Figure 1 (cartoon, rainbow, N blue to C red):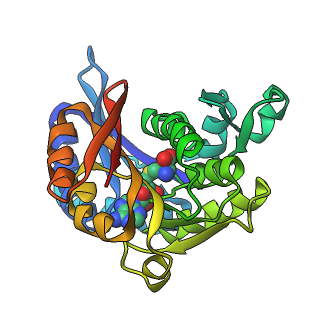
Figure 2 (cartoon, rainbow, N blue to C red; figure 1 turned 180 degrees about the vertical axis):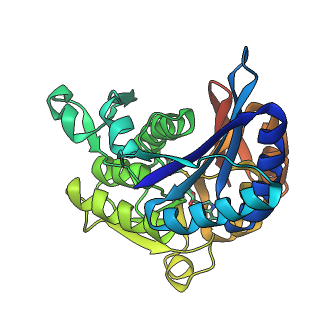
Length: 290
Ligand code: SAH
């Protein structure tokens, strides 16, 4: 459980205390704040958020700091019960449609229509519930590219919750390598793949870019999708070129409208050509071929 330790003081005392607490506690990574509590009485509150296991020790340290500053103020405590914010925020998430795909949580299974390709995601610890414009953009692009090109060996680089890899496996019935730099994401992606009945098709590997034996070994890919961010995507351009089968498609996202030209330039420099740009809000998804 988290606890809020706080002290109420005059503006001048509160500011001194806030500065002293900063010096004392910031190296420990504690969150400290000062707020104007009562404007008329000129009272300020200085607060510190700590884990309950650290409360006693922190109170002792604050008390000795107070005596050094010559202040006699009570240290008050408020307990903040644990709330599973991730679960709470997911409860409110509505299912997302992108092309034929419907990305939904367990609570919305009844929203599936007969022709939907449903992807159930209990994201929690990994990015990718379908609500972000980049994910939705990729899903739409995937639907079109798969319909036209029938890829058989796909890489989803930066898989997060596994949403794109699962959508692909369910739609194309082909193996997908789903990689992420974050081992938690890889584990979540594997679990989500199993939940969606494509555990055998989606293979999760923790790797940075192409720097992993399994990622290199399965190349060349005939479709690569990477929804990361503009800068890492630009750095990855030569590796993408090396690992994509010639004539195949690359779908990139995580790119802001104003970063589009720079990302395109990096890929044109690797002999990719631009096929299409799809915009969703301030984000773009690019379809390139080489
Ligand atoms: N593919 C999902 C998640 C996108 S979030 C979707 O479209 O919704 C981007 C993910 O890429 C994160 O999980 C992050 O950990 C991962 N990532 C960032 N840089 C990476 C890199 N260089 N190699 C592999 N994964 C990376």
